[in-house]
Length: 164
Image 1 (spheres, rainbow, N blue to C red):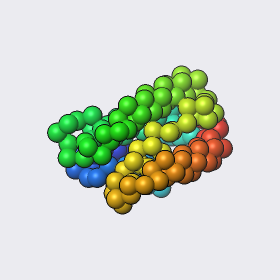
Image 2: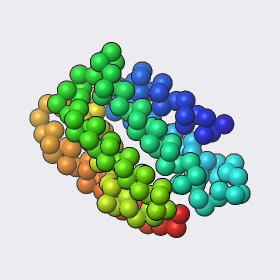
Image 3: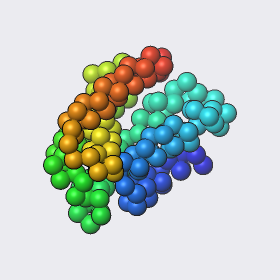
């Protein structure tokens, strides 16, 4: 049931909500709270406990990131203009992260996420943040701040997930 929510809801939230809000909901609520390996660990079958990253989480993270491209690439989305100057950057960082997810899945070594940092979320959220809060100046500084925060987050996550 919980995994079904992570499959269905990203398409809906990225189609309806502002990209900044949608990515926050995807990362904090769907990936952070709804995922069984966080608060609902007793719902994980014993055979995959401790291996949730390679069993389902990497795929569902990628699915959420892919759905994040709805307002980036779909001209019919009302939030499409937000990414006007950042479309290539966002798509490139998405591809980089998906390559990283594939490498992590194949090697079963989460330390590769240090090489394949999730700059996609950092750039996506910073662009969305600037639009949501109507920030016209200092976009590069804000993007840099988001990247620093997400690099620190990734280092922390690697320390948590070193034993896949």
